[in-house]
Length: 117
Image 1 (cartoon, rainbow, N blue to C red):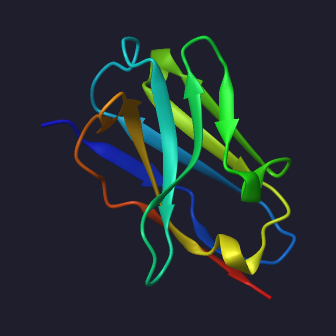
Image 2 (image 1 turned 180 degrees about the vertical axis):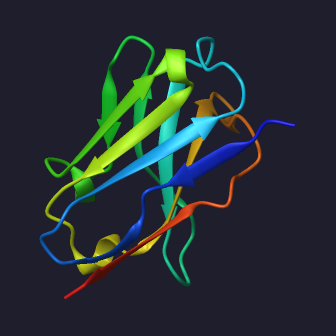
């Protein structure tokens, strides 16, 4: 069973920064899109950012200009650099592959990000 381990979250003041990391237990070379998602309390999980093997990136409007997604296929890892954090960024953040039918694997435990005002 594929395991995804997300870490790097924490409590930060508004305007602060965090860098999230995700390690996948299998090779991600063949996974065209890797993505970060988040789920805030009482809300549905949403796609935050995705990156292709070719390096093309997509961001949801609410994080454009503040978040940067990257990947390292050799390390089977995906990263999310988050800057100028806002209280509305508070959520549990998850990584996963993204295919034409949705996520590639089961979910990991995620990493909690809490932004205080």
